[in-house]
Image (tube, rainbow, N blue to C red; front, side):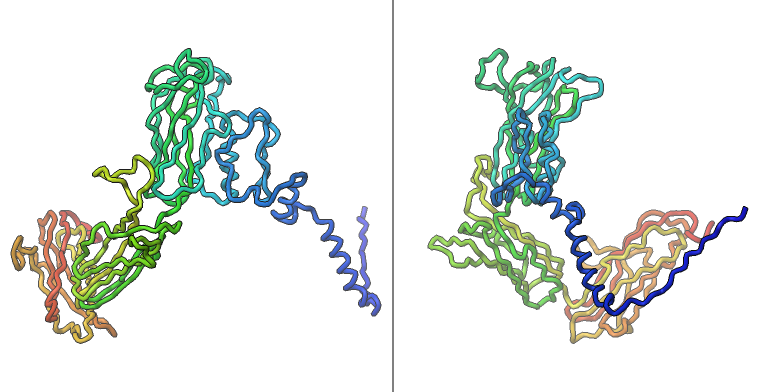
Length: 504
């Protein structure tokens, strides 16, 4: 039976002038209708946010400037904070939670608000499989009480918070250790005495003692912000016989720098001996507090001077803005200079534990770094020659580039000499003799278009039977009146065996 084939033929027609004129208007009407019927979820985050808040009335800035990390919610009502238009809907609204569960939600809310926590959310660990809700000892805290956010703190401030906990389950709890992470201290754990009346004063807990079910516990914690900056998120780890494992508490704060430095790093780059160069940095207090300011160590490297100048100082010499000027030259010496300049104010850091080693109160400080490569007539790279691991008879070459910075002195490869000697004479002038110097040769090549040369050192091969490390010196004789020669240390290790690539 033959299949039936059907062919559809389309006839091309030319629209009339009237249809052609009406076509643009029809297309505009269709586009407008399509826009009105577009689903809210298809329009991106803004449409979705508007839908999220249907049925809620918010005053302006209800949710601005803070997050919900660490806030306590009413566990009895099962309610959650009303979400703002810029944050995700609280998926947990309308039902109850076990203690600690809201901390994870708070962490998500903080992230939506632009916070960058340095650790994960504080939550109570899950029960091991097969264990009932009230079996074994339990260390608990109320919903939202597992973490505390201090908000904004000034660098150096000491913030205190006391965590309130309690025991649950059907066995006594035993705490073996409380270990905070860096930046936090917990000096003691306070517990309710056995058979004490409600509201009785808590006593200090001795690690390892049994804590009956239903006992109140308090843990005073201290957050230290000295030398801290930005968002801080620390943890307090509580080790006990709770079958869920380690229980965590958290402290958070955003720490503001007391001083603003611009720039914080003075990089002089390459400075020639005899050259004079000055860089400046501005120092201001973040909140406009006037202070006296001085350098902790007034002694500076040779040829370097530093000066602190206040702007609009009061009668006592205090100011909220200072300027540090650092000058190199003209009497600097050839070196790679790296120096930290500590600036000390007279304003004490609040907190009774902020004391120096001498017992004096600690004050706000700032540290500014400076660096410079102070060069003589020549610079060279690398600064030493490592021949590496070699075998007897193995040929190795190394090259050092020497560049002249004296515009009145010309490096001429044909006038430069190279010698290989031993190490410097201890406590004296000159160099020791070296029995392996005879195994080295050298070549000097001019660099085209530069006042520089390449010096190639060639190890022609250590004699058979050589073993152990070797050290010597390559002297490049340049003939400059201020720096006649440069010395580079030669190092290497010789081991017996086949030469790499040549077999036995």
